[in-house]
Amino acid sequence: MPQNNCYFIRNMLDTMLNPICYKDRNGIYVRVNRTFARQIVGLPEEEIIGYTLPEVASKIVEKFPERTFVNETLLLEHVAEWNTDDTELLNRGGASTHEYEGICADGIKRTFLVNKSTFDNEEGEIAGLVTVLQDITELDEVEKKLKKDEERYRVVTTQTGQIVFDYDITNKKISWSGATRKLMGFDSKKL
Image (cartoon, rainbow, N blue to C red; front, side, top):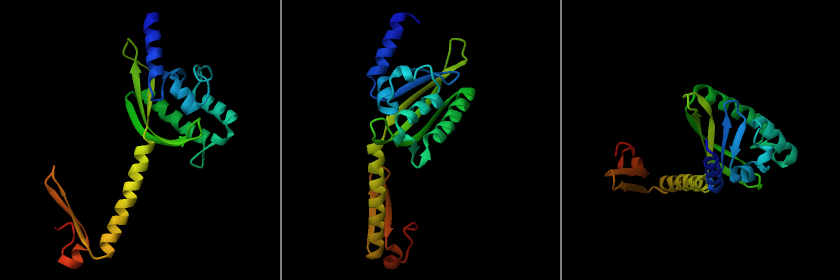
């Protein structure tokens, strides 16, 4: 790749707000953007590039003992699972998506949607793995609050003997909840 293309890609990745990294076929970090290095790992790029995930995780635990555990599990245990998943993905090719919740380098607990995809070289062989993280912390918190409110709403309508219905304008469907059996003699699903 011409030198100016490498410069462009490096700058483009560093301007992205999402943490991004990519590894070669052997699981060695080839490039990380600034957000990944600063927010996720908390180490300078030079201490990440050229190393594997387990090696970087060992550096994190050594430098930041408070990050030794992720949700009451050793970070190094999580890393062993992630590394196995990455290796399997590098062997078969394709993509995967999952959620991850952990303490970031700045000490803030965040939830991420982690998207991983393999990429090919010019010969069409798997050359490496790109990972892009999307911070969904606020969305996750809103979803938890909505579920909690929905449960409270369901309990209140059932316990107070009320019936509530919602009409979905788009799908033209009505859903019933509350004390439908008590007041109408029908289960809410039959209504």
